[in-house]
Image (cartoon, rainbow, N blue to C red; front, side):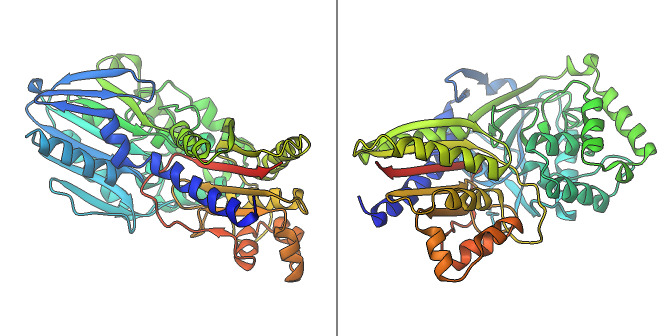
Length: 444
């Protein structure tokens, strides 16, 4: 099998993974509406049925990279069954908005928040306040919601919150750490939105970008009542040496807000959170198509995490292990998760591109191998690329162009490296987000 065929197949498989987690597919797989009976089935095939006759009005809220697509499909499902949506508010990244029939769409900034995001939060809060105990709120949540719903807690400005986010990203904080801090610096995250929703009922349909599908973390858990984790918040601030950015008075305000989410209030809330899509669904979509193409397929890791360069070493070792078998078979190895980057240089890149550059250096000179790492949302770090692909010839290609590949890696400049060798993965915004995908294709 030649390199052109491997490259064609690896791009096809990446696209198939993204296709498997499109809202247009996931919403119709999860939702069955027959008359007034709404049945929602999660990723584990566990279903919940809701009698819509119990409610006077149905409102829609939500945020994230897949939220507009989710809302669009929900409007179609409801219209087909003659069910009415009273109104709704969805917050989505710039450039991904659509005109919906009943639901207002607000464009806002991601990954760094802006004032439009605050506007979206205030509109969502007002809608929730207007809902009564006889109403149902359906929350459509997906990856990206944390940045899109940035209303700061008392005692901190948006600019200060943005700077904390910047520093955490720069210092290589994990998505779990980032979202824990965001929750504590927010007006609605960490279950705080439930204060405004009560006494209405709320059900959240969630496309997860978090490995393990922890609903406390996805979108910073706006409808997930959470236990006091003020100590965890303080530990992260100390770990990344951000104490000077979080003054003592602000810490007191944050602790008060956390304590308000007491068990007495939480027990009154009728809140249901249902995962309808995740990274595993994307990996299984790739597995199915790769098998149809004749590859021997193995899902290697569904919880890939850690520093991108170290993960690159791990994947390269997997490749070497298979190459030694020499059984003249075509193999496909699949990984899913989300790595992180400790930024030390002043270059441009993202975790997927840095991971790909790390693999490229390790597999230099190997024949019959292709590797791709990309974000399912089509965005890797602060770049317009989803990620990058490489082969055993990538570093030789760089040498011919007189590129110092090690310097590019040291400066966290993977985007410009792959741009020079023409090996960026460019998809544009995909309309979904279930973390990252890594694929290896090789002929042993």
